[in-house]
Length: 583
Image (cartoon, rainbow, N blue to C red; front, side, top):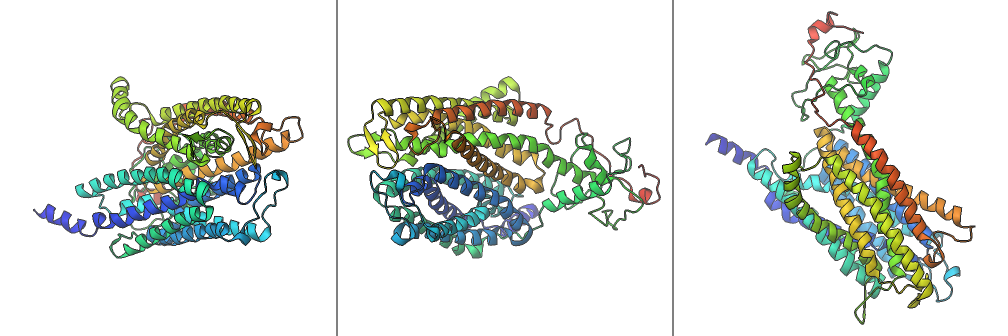
């Protein structure tokens, strides 16, 4: 009975069920607002701001890269100074202001250039300096908002439940299910309804709706302030990473002991949430941070008096976990280039294809990307409920196959995705030159090839994402120390960021290299270029990336593998008398 009363008392501190309407409502409306704006941004920049396709693509890639890179800064500030509640509150307001600015650029004629007249596609007036600055200020607010929301919203929702009770664990599991349901729901609505209003009704209304939804999101978030569990920041684990690096550099001239338990400091903090890790032989130079010298002093509890001079072998192994994942992480950078193309140039392809569905309805170009989400949504339960149990019987592994094997399958599917994309683009271009059904006033002839031919590459991209991206989330969660999981989550977004920058650089190089040639690869009018060659180039890069990934995967050692050795805690009194000092 005493245990039940204790659990009830502990549970009373958490108001998960009462807080969920506010948390889920905030996240649903936030996604409806931001996703609806971001998914159609390319079309907006080329049709309202009269930007060239290359300029608009690079700007969107840089924007996406910066907003993903900002998540690392947001996670650091959240963990170190502000906590999740204050970070989310500030970021939500910033996102609303960003969408409000974008709405004003569409609603007020002086904030965007005049509409391009038919036949003047080469001499369309672009945005002036003040119009561009106002637009970029909106992007700036969205970057700040995304940098704070993305690394914190999922963790903040889980904070509302007590992880030490059975009801709390059930609540967290239920919250994750609702979280991904709302994400899928928001994607579906954004890529269909909101994109339709923007493309076929009015850009002003199409951007005002997401801004209003974001205002509702902010209101719901702050209405629940009194019942939220607000966990105070506990310091950034990046500080511990820096301490190991500094200590190892300071002791770089010392020789490592011959045995793993001689002269290495391994004090275990009782308050640490991290599981004890076995000692590994990789990155042995970092072990020097744990070498004990006569100059090292200790506190009464056995911990080192100067954490910047002496670190425990446990702290060193935690840093090794981070460093060990970096080669695997670098393979994701090239991989994400495939996903970037499905979100950018696929839209430009759709604009020059037959998008008619029935006698009067035309599918908005940006809405085609919903097929990737549909494929991912359908595939996940099939894989989880049917394939995993069957594979488990064959391999004996809990997940059917390892996390790295899942990633490898996704990278291979990326090669197939870009190869199919190149083939479809070749057919689209051929029919546009031979049998056009119309002319787009900005881009050129419209191919008679149905836009539904884009579905195979988008479905393949969705399946690839279901393997690789979801496996990377699982990989970062399981392979990072418990106190570094926020960093692991941020690394996923940082990978997106670097990939967006890389894609922008690749597009710029291809554009400037082929511009003076007889056939430019990436012109404004895709019919005059060779986008299919660009797709095949990306496919070739993915082949090289697959080989690099296989090498990294074979080298990688999973956290806590049996090859490591647990080091017993060194007796501080013996160390101070010099009886266990080995240099």
